[in-house]
Image (cartoon, rainbow, N blue to C red; front, side, top):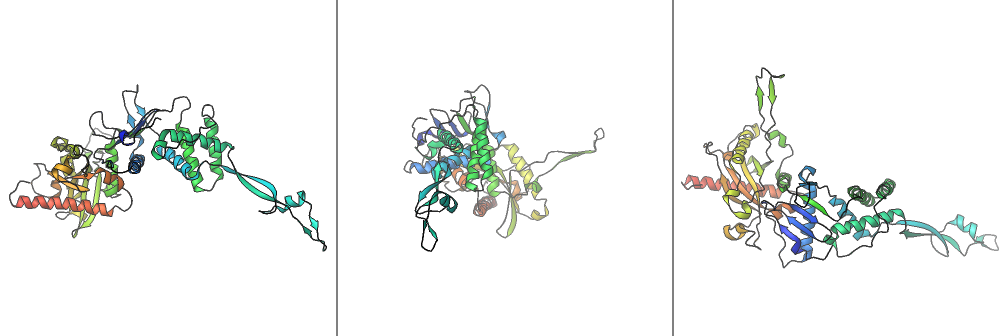
Amino acid sequence: MTDFNLRDICHVCKNDDGDRFVGIKADADSVAVYFPLGYQLPSVTENERDLRRDITHLILVLAAFTEQKDKLLAMKKFFAPQSVDFPVNAYMTVISDYMTRSYYMETELKYVTSDSGKIDWRKTMRKHQPIIQSNGSPIYTKFEVRNSTPNDRTLITRVHEFCVYEAFQKLGWLFSTETPRKPQLKLEGNKNMFIGVVRDKMGQTFIDNDKQLFQSMIDMLNYLDEKSPQNRYYFGTDNFEYVWERMIDKVFGVKNKRDFFPRTYWRHLPKSSTSSHENDALEPDTIMIMDVRGKRRAFVLDAKYYRFGATGSPTHLPPSSSINKQITYGEYVSTLPEFSGTDTVFNAFIMPYNRTSYDKEKNPHGNFLGLNGEFEFIGEAHGDWKTIGLSYEAVQGIVVDTRYLMYHYSGNTAPQIKLMADKILDAYDHHRSLSAFGTPS
């Protein structure tokens, strides 16, 4: 792969026609990295290491939240859609292990004659003549000692050498400018033998690092097709909205989400084989529950990977169908005994945005609307068929900084849950106070 400026190959997608892909595209001569809508790349004053870290983290997020069914790419340069199943974690493991431990080599046990070292007495007595002392006891002045030396000629080392070179050809630019030595073995005609050698070694080791390395090598070898060129690869998705939904649910959601699905069914079906039929349930993206401000409250969150945070255009907000569905979710949750009180169920749309101000064109909110927090309120949606004024009848619009979310989706998410709950409650209270004074909300 030819040299390139790392910043020049990075692009933040707009999530419009022709610009939806998030991930990495590469061939023998070039590579391009596509970040999701609302992502802020490190500023030009920061060093390249920060950008490499962001790219690495993007890969980890995609690997964690992208399912196979989401990885269908239909691009003009291909005659048919390509199903992407690039084992990126395996490639990264092989590179990381190599940079830590170099090539995998087995130690070769030899015996040499020396006056010090770990003595093999059996071999020493066979090979060397002792000096007999006056009391009849023998003294040896030379010994056969064990000498372990790394052997770089074993087959497993040659297979590892191939995998390291292949991994650096694909992703080495992300970690280092180093180019490992070219492998002496080729994949053509040897793929099954390569896999067999690695499987055999993996079955013989109890060392976790070696097991992880061997499994990654197997995953790489299974991915490679010895009949087709391997100088082009893609890792990512045209459907980042699913990644956005799963990240939101990972950070804020309860595990027993199915308990909050509104269900419907048909009854009294005289010509059917059964008298009733249950429909598929409506499934909200995320149910967040928290004891906050003296009450146990439920927040029904709908993750929307929409463009409003980047454009500020109302046409890029959730439509009526989404608003009505969200109100239905809230209404159902309010029927559950745990949340039957007033002001216990709230609704919100969660959309991406960029809270920083490095680039005015990419971040109109940070410069023109005064929004610069990790979570910010942007408006409130209503349905004119709901006028009682219950808390779930208003759907709060919340934007979340994309980069912040991608770096805070794992570990202890309690601070993020508290921040989100407060933001939604503050927005709701603010608009109720405006309504009380006759100000349009």
